[in-house]
Length: 185
Image (tube, rainbow, N blue to C red; front, side, top):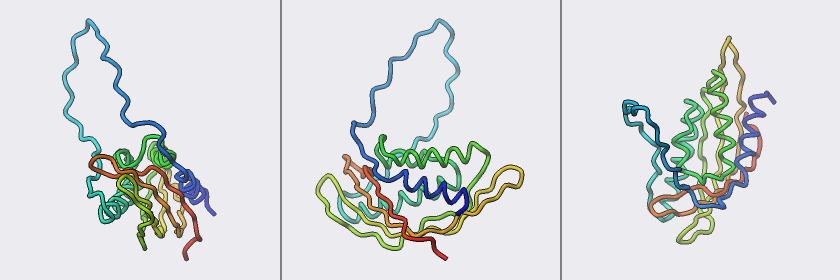
């Protein structure tokens, strides 16, 4: 197994067992006052928004598909911002996001690594939660870095068990448990 493949498996394992124990969105600290003139306002920045879906099975399935789409985009671009509103802030998923950011900050990029959802199934559900099972496989990818560095990312088969919490207008991942089945050929 290559170092990058080991990192991907480590990131996958890091996703396991995330949970939310506190409410998101702590209040911001009060602004500091200064006697210096205020700097010129910067142009508005786009912020990541939640993926708004219905509170039913179809909405939960659409949410899961969107999450993996954004995860693939994060691997390709190094930008994990769009994943933030899709999971609880205390989720262990953050470790995988940190790995993506670290790769990008090292001047490397990931190409070709994509999650293919083979099957999405509904487990138990209620008005405020949904348990989803996803059987997926990843395509072979490659990490490209500075000075002609290149390392393969082996394809893998995974079963992901997600617990989604329903917030007022959207779902958020509360827990993910991953089971790596085997490398694909």
